[in-house]
Length: 138
Image 1 (cartoon, helix red, strand yellow):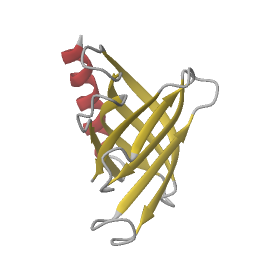
Image 2 (cartoon, rainbow, N blue to C red; image 1 turned 120 degrees about the horizontal axis):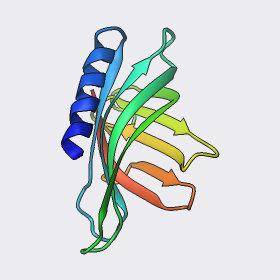
Image 3 (tube, rainbow, N blue to C red; image 1 turned 90 degrees about the horizontal axis):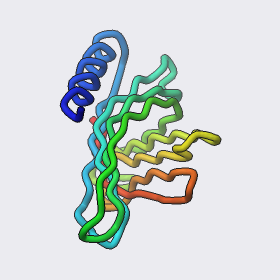
Image 4 (cartoon, one colour; image 1 turned 45 degrees about the vertical axis):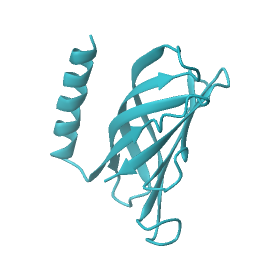
């Protein structure tokens, strides 16, 4: 199942990149067992004025603790993007991608790409559970 999901997502991302301006997102858990964390791979497609975006992400969440179980899924959503100049928050240009899905199982995604903080990006579900990660946006 996981390999089919990865194959589908990869194919979808390649097809999107052929037709639109896009950015790739990779988030990796920093390995802090005392925090809920997530891994994420995906692509965002920007509109013509570069402020409104849509995205497709493959996500793996892991609750805090040494023996916690991972959950996987695919998220397709739309939101906004804001870019901060190089040096404003770190050495690289920082990209803030935000999605708000009130009423869905997933309530909020805030990806702060290229930020030096290890827990700068977050995903919150309607049950109040929040997961953190560190992301790169290219």
